[in-house]
Amino acid sequence: MSKATSDDSHLVPRIINHMNKDHSHNIEDYLVVYAHVDPEIAKRRPALETLNLGAMSLSYIDMEGTKCFIRVPIEPTMESFHDARAKLVEMAQVAAARRGFSEYLVNDVPFFSSFKDYVCVALFASLYTFAVKPHLLRYLVDDVLLLGPEISGYIMDYHVTVFRGLLLIHAVEAIVILYPLLRKFRMGTAKKLACLLLCLVEGIVFLSAFKETVDRAQNPNRNKEK
Image 1: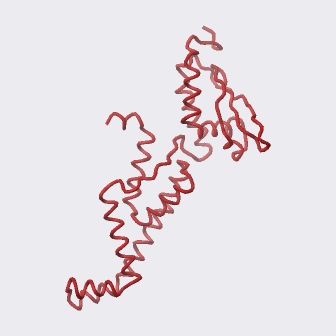
Image 2: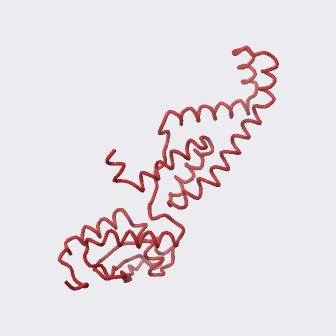
């Protein structure tokens, strides 16, 4: 069999449909890395048009609104279209890594996925409320809980410091740990802001939930089997 032809070409329409439906971000990477298209232009409706064993044809819309086509070689040439999935994944991994991204796209915000989330939000809301309205905390510790003056005084002296410290720790987690992950997995701007805000409130609890979301995106088949 020639390397230019294959008897499994019936697979091509399904491959093209799958790539255009679920992997437009990978096609964008192909355009930027392998075809040297400007990253901002490559975002404009990237699509896989045709595929053969030795090359793929990609398209995008230029700044004048014209649909442009470009050929990207596949090296080495595939033996059959059964090799296409592995080869396209390999090319996607290389292209994404060169751009500083993951080949996977994560755009799901894990809103309140467990009981721990509600506990964290309630705790943060309470600390915030007591920090801005200390008379409520005074009422709680003196008139409701009936704590002694020594314990009450200690709580009143340090509750704002505790809140500020917690907020600082969560802010560091959001900036140092979460933000690089959001960028790597190309989360949209609005959802990125939502994630950062939730991390300010929940800290490590949200980071754990987000990493589970990433794991589901990277291992879709494994999660379906559970």
